[in-house]
Length: 256
Ligand SMILES: Nc1ncnc2c1ncn2[C@@H]1O[C@H](COP(=O)(O)OP(=O)(O)OP(=O)(O)O)[C@@H](O)[C@H]1O
Ligand SMILES: [Mg+2]
Image (cartoon, rainbow, N blue to C red):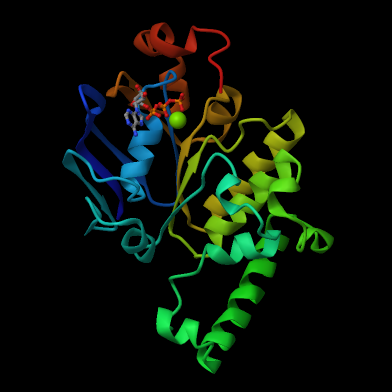
């Protein structure tokens, strides 16, 4: 029962962004997916979250086939992801952004929602309570709940974004560069949060350029270059892998 990626391939006109990628992310562990800019990490995450369908290959989670399913169906299988920024939530309060994480998971359909039926209002209330609890969980204090989400400092936006993903109560969390733009203290707090989430049994797939965080936090590391898997192992194994050092780790200032 884990995330299994098998021979996953994505071609964009003339470019193979992900090329027969295979790996397993074990349940209740943090698996990091690393590699140079353009290696295909985000593309792999996007296939796992249903942003786009693979050209070929398969993705299963807890034995269920996710390959090619649309995002909302994948969400129902217990998968949530974060994005690099909150730009798509313009004009929403912090609380509203977090509540969007569970929309579509409620039982009332769009017509009930349009008519504002009591069942919907009850669901909204439950959702709001869950969103508040999740914001509390990621240490966003209540006086910020009604602030415009995009106006918050970057570190806080990151927490809001994680709360948005968690409110759907996922069993698999896909994180795309959660530490980008964070200062060292914020990065440490983020690592602690991810570690705490793992302790609750959550499976995490972490795309990240911050190697200190990756190597200290991850249980397993998967390395990609030009769309292909070049290595997989424990942080210690990866740090000692000559091919990985040449392709990625040896290069200073890999950017974010
Ligand atoms: N929608 C798209 N259409 C065409 N090409 C794309 C698309 N998305 C990504 N690519 C290309 O696919 C390759 C892999 O991109 P991807 O964003 O997955 O890399 P990445 O490993 O996440 O890089 P970074 O570390 O810079 O975020 C790149 O060459 C990129 O230009
Ligand atoms: Mg990326």
